[in-house]
Length: 585
Image (cartoon, rainbow, N blue to C red; front, side, top):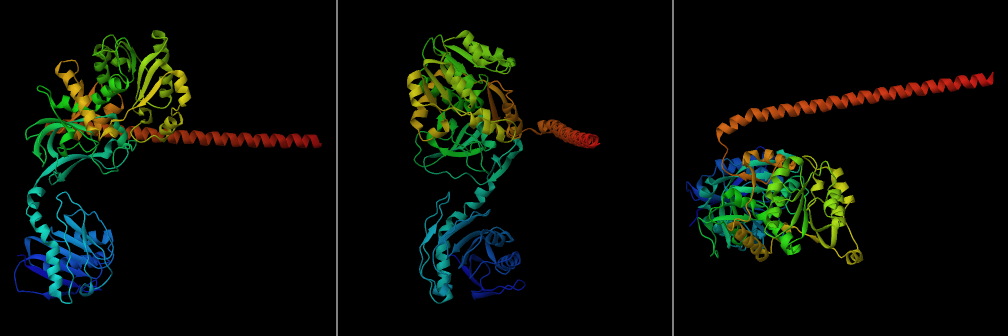
């Protein structure tokens, strides 16, 4: 039975002398629960400090004790945060608001019990139904009994309200001791916006979920767009990106029958997988075949499912057909090329920079095209005058128009991205506007008369189609077991190197998949990278200085031009005046 200490805070606390009136005191040295009644929250940090100091200094609380705070008027987020911030030691705080329903997010272990009622003293407060916010641990709902005129009833009500949380406090030390690292997108912008942070507490494991210790994560082009705020399937920052990973099952939730601890799995999700530990639905995990590495497993889900469903579900790829694959050296491009080789006599046109032609040629591209120096439309027309059967378009904008015009009758255009919007580290509004200005649109009558089809594919919007995705991935894994497809890993990077990994992909320097590994970076490598990082910073400073100097020089040149123009204008005016004078004479 918890021993309760009840306090009532005066309605107008003095900034210097906070008056706390003890209602009951049984002479016990330690208390398991502290209940505080306040007609309004402290209005200043000084009040908050006095309140918290009185609560922690004058009240002997047990180590696992928790505090119940009742506010009978509206409470602002900053004020409550300030109140709890000054506590001398961690407390599990249950904040009850008796005026308005509010759900506040604070950096403390707090259970919010939101109640509705009129602004009144506790002795006159009518019975109210408490609506508790859902938490990962899913504590049961509680009710606050009607308060009587005496303080003893108020104390009993407070004890009843806090009782459900007593069971959860026993787990707090174990959860707080558990830490794991996670990459977090802190805001939209450059590579430095993705930061490595340490999180406390185990991810909550719900029914039908499994907990996975992540070994490797896949980096996709969508992650680069998400960093700039151009990907709509990622929630607003702060948030952990990552749509695919691989690892080992550490724990299984209730109702999970087809996964067990120790299973090696690959995971597909909308976001949140760039972490050392994740909790995901069991039907979003897929068993890894024997002999597959964690790096390969992290490279399969997004790229290969995308390529497979576009080629065989939308494209119905058949023997003796022709196809154009843009960015043939990228993750999806490599996967699509390998899958095309599983069908006889398919002619593959692939665009990539000249330095990658040998690699994509060995992978299965029949006609490599350097898009930087040549017009790929003309190159395709030279070899296939009638056009192509399938075009995979991840670019968008004007390239979608070109792709449609390259189709032969009964041809299929499958668009699955807008990479042309990505230009530079930060969002380039000009590139975005240009892409939208050249957005492809067509009338249905034109489609009928042209005998062509246009398809759109976005794996992020197939999140609920688990059966469809499972069928595709099972077919891909069968091809992997037969040795017909195998992910090409371009490079692996530690989580600490995520900025360099994103830079490599965004600058189109990769051939195959870029993979992040969760193994901590060795100290020796960190020491080796430190001078390189410093050099990069110095180079960046030099570049910035050069740019600034150039801007200054350009500004001076413009000033000189303006001065020259002014002088010329003055000369012209003087000449005109002289001419007028001559005419008058």
